[in-house]
Length: 146
Figure 1: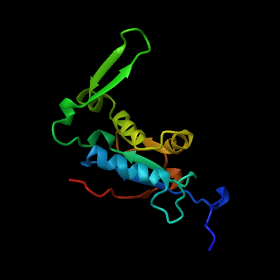
Figure 2 (figure 1 turned 90 degrees about the vertical axis):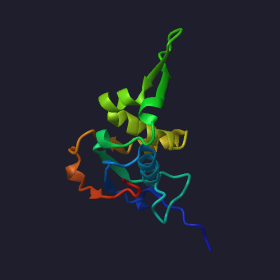
Figure 3 (figure 1 turned 180 degrees about the vertical axis):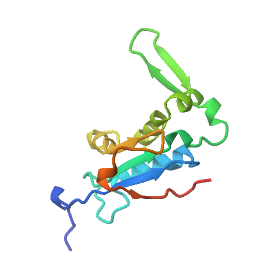
Figure 4 (figure 1 turned 45 degrees about the horizontal axis):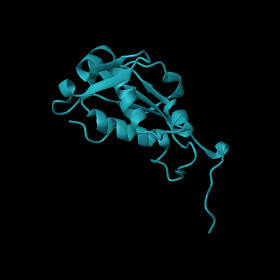
């Protein structure tokens, strides 16, 4: 039996909408990353971009369990000497909640050019509105909400 290798023309991409209300951040990120990679399809191939487009709405209502809101920090460097910076997730969730979701999903994607290409199919919005109605996205529910 031959191994099935999908061609670019054979790949069918769908648009999905995920409501992040009361869903833990890590659980949301892992399941969204699986959809972006195409792991939910029977034709999944690790070396090809098989994934669908994902729209995450209500990113401001995502939940961090335990005391992570106060203890978890985002560290980065400004590329200047002594430029180490730290920001608590409490501040990130208050000011720019889509960034927290994007960062969590990006951390679960492959660290190569294919992963960066797959990540571009993610669209995250803080509120319930999104500008992608023309693509007729289907609603998908994430397991594990509170």
